[in-house]
Structures are given as C-alpha cells and as structure tokens.
Image (cartoon, rainbow, N blue to C red; front, top):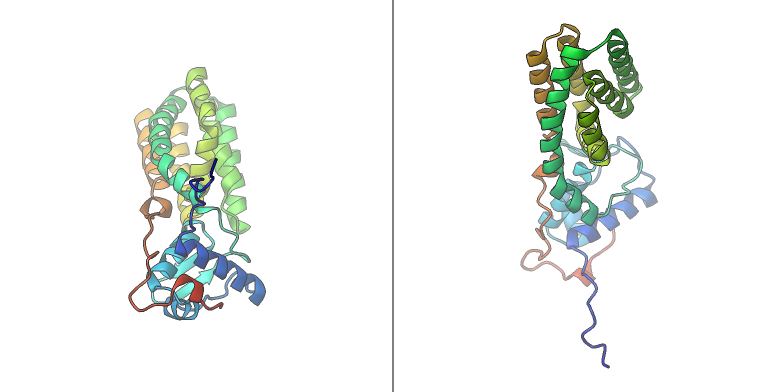
Length: 252
C-alpha cells in the first residue's frame, strides 16, 4: 500500500525558527544576563525575515522570563541562555491557565476566610515562617517560589478543612505552573510578598471578610501574566512582500 498519503510533519512556525537562531547566537556569542540583543529591525534584516516574526519570537522569550523588553531601551537577557520551552507546551499552558486561576480564586478565597476563623498559634507561626522564607529568597535575587508555596500551604492548613485541602492537592501541579508564571513577571515577587502580608494580617486579626478580600486581590494579581496576552497564532509566518524566502535566511 502506498505511503504517499502518510501524515506530514508539521512545519515549524517561522518565529520558532527565529528562536532557534537567537538561541545559537547567544550561545556562540557567549552572551549572558544583562547583555542586550540587537534591535528587532537589525535582527529582521540579518535573518531575512519580517519584523513581525522577530517580534513574535521576542514575545515568546519575554513570556518565559528569558528577556526583559525595556520600552525604548531594547531587549536584554535575563538569564545566561535562551533555552526556551517548546511553543506547543506554552500554548497548552495558556489554554488551561484561566481555568486554574478561576479554581484558585474560588478555593483560596474560602480558605483564607476559614483560616481567619479557625487559625491556631501554630498556624500563624507557620505562615510567618513562610513569609520570612519568601523574603529571604527575594533578597537573594530569586523569585520567592518556595516561600510562596509554603505560605499558601500554611493558609490551607489553617482553614482546617480536609475537603478543601484535598481539592487543593488535586490541582497542585497546575497551581505550581500558575505560581511560576506569576512570579517571573517583572517586580511581581515583591508585590506578591506584600499581598501575602495583607492576607496574614487579616487572618491574625480574625477578620474573615478582609482575609477573603485580600486573597481575592492577590489571586487576581496572579492572573495578570504576560502569557495570557500572548497570541500563539501564526502571526508573522508569511513574512512581508519582497522579503527573502525561508531558505534564503542569513545567519546572525
């Protein structure tokens, strides 16, 4: 039987090919955190692609926290490599993230309310220790991920609801994704820490409504991530009139 109609391999989006070139450029050039990438116009000219393709590649790098785009000031590396996550994984995470954030708001708002009613001194000690851990991580130049995880776990424990705790465990992996997505946003770790302190203050004061409101504000801040603004479509893949074809691209 002829295999002429066998499934065709998916053609990489042009901006994904730009990502591969940029990764090689950074590696071969020995660039590291703080170094600036060439302007988008120069990258487009040297690669023989449209600026739209370059811009889409830069957005993917920004979404993953690998570069910082300073408006009017250029694009700078945040890390020493551009080892990007496969685009299809980003697309899948973007698809499920809104549902995860909805679940977090519903569950964690109630958990904070219950924690304000039921917390013990040991619970308060655990939450304070978590915030101290997060603060230390941020001061060390990290995102505060572990301290963040410990704080939310401590709030869950302070609610003393086995059913809600089980619901939280059931989406633990997705919550971890949303945590990393949020905390790699510029200036987000410090803001998150401040919001955690507001939540803790309300819980310690035994104010259920205020604790719930503080948690709701926090989770809605978590929902403000670059990934959800990203359009993973084929933007820029067709190039612009008069530009070289894909196989005419020049290396950086």
